[in-house]
Amino acid sequence: MTAPAGGGGAALPSPRPAATRGRVRIADRVYARIAARAAREALAGVWAGRSVTGAPPTVSVSAPGSTVTVRVGVELPFPADLGALARGVRQRVAAQVQGLTGTRVSEVVVVVEKLIAGGAP
Image 1 (cartoon, rainbow, N blue to C red):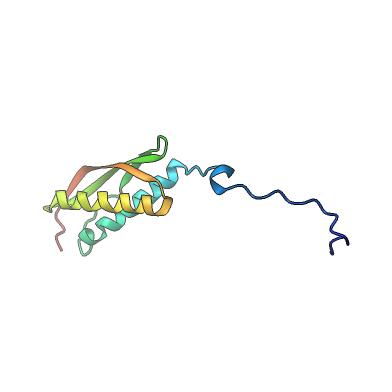
Image 2: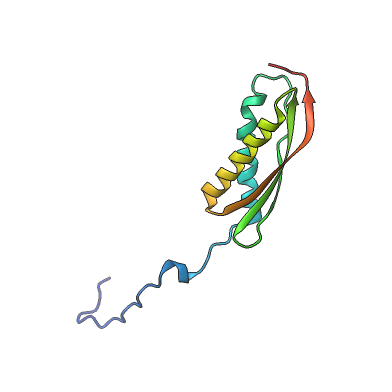
């Protein structure tokens, strides 16, 4: 199809700046899926080669305003440096959630729900 001769078409309005066109709302379940995957990745090395493994992480998220708070429940092997493992989970979850969504992570709470003995590599 060709445009009518003489340019009789209506002029398009000039685009508004992106900041004034609307906003993006990310569902809590999206934050939760990103956090769960990040926690699994952070703990993958500690479970490698063991005959038993912990359950997948449980995640709950609260996103009031422009920040997100994440609670991650994990099962960890025993004996292990629990503080270092929890710190690794916290750092990876915060980095992945902020990196993939652009949302500031105000807090990541890691709760050790169960210690799994045995099955040492």
